[in-house]
Image 1 (cartoon, rainbow over the protein chains, first blue to last red):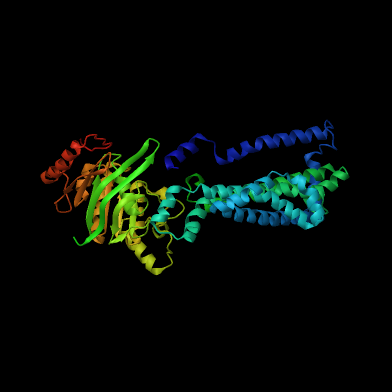
Image 2: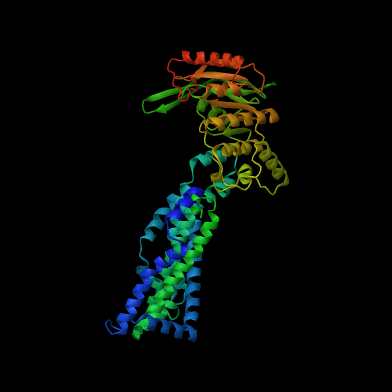
Length: 267
Length: 258
């Protein structure tokens, strides 16, 4: 964007501090209202514990260390599942994107598997792999596989034909064509796929941990539900929200670094 | 001038279209000597781009012979540099990496040549810029440097300055002539601008459409650097122009000054 356009943009909009305040207005009002309603007994404390109770519950979980040990276990599962599923998605996406023959061979089957809901395979995964780490990591991996697979595939196929012509004129070897043209050209799509995959990994984690688990944030929540300890359920939801946001922000930072050459990523 | 570098004899090429085959090139005969600067001019649809793409090895399916240094042209390669109308730089690479492309800048030989070329195309200070940060003329200069790094025997330019404004275009013409006189690279330059053709070329090849064939080749026997505002330049320009007007369906989209 030109400096002039940037200047007009900032001139027409409130400052950064004011913008942050504006963004906080709604959540803060809701929290205050919620707290007030709970405080005067207008909403059920069991169904809607007040923000204060939730914060107290968070503090006690944090102090006892339960929260952190469960969070670590969950984070490790997500990372393992994402690395496995996303990694395979990338590899298969590249294979299928590059070679028409592997597309014919693999894509129909993969698309079929994609249509199977994660929840439907949970019983099978538990039968096959038990309720240990394997079934959870594999469930997350299944969720993480497809966004990266599809977007890598699409990214490779959408590399500009005109640049292919350039690579022929410049005498690129086939491996150089892949390394220097196809893969860099597909990076915007690959990054989009990676972000979606990581998001789905967290969703997969929730499915895996709520259904069969003896540790992790999801387990902490389902355990709390059994004892009607609603504040802990809220703490769990909050943790998932924050973790999802943090991991997405991390991905966006990586994306920003990798795509510095793109106009839309400037500023 | 030296020996014949590029030999085009009896070249015919037709395209299959929905309405039957269309002859794009008909009996084209052209012999280019080493170090020559050939400009090719003609109305749209006369096959000038097709001719260039055949020489580059990008298009096949023709009859006749096209040889470079006596060898039949077999697909594209670095001995035939090609500059497209758009710069076609890799948007994710900086200027210097675009010039190197598949070669490594860590190779001292490549590094040295890239630096020399950046000097030659007057882009010092922009080595680390991305294509989106460059003007059209600068980007096209990077594309020229990228082709020259590979020491092509011939540089093929397909309306490379067509998308540039008049001032940038005039500047680029001077830059290109400088490069030509420094490197003595043989050039075939396709354009639809008569001034540009006469300003740059040793010989101007005039094509006519349907079917695309050579109408006339006009030798431009003027010393470089040429001045457009001289009687001798204008005389030759008129000569080319009158040939042009004889072409039945004059379809100049940008016939400067007609």
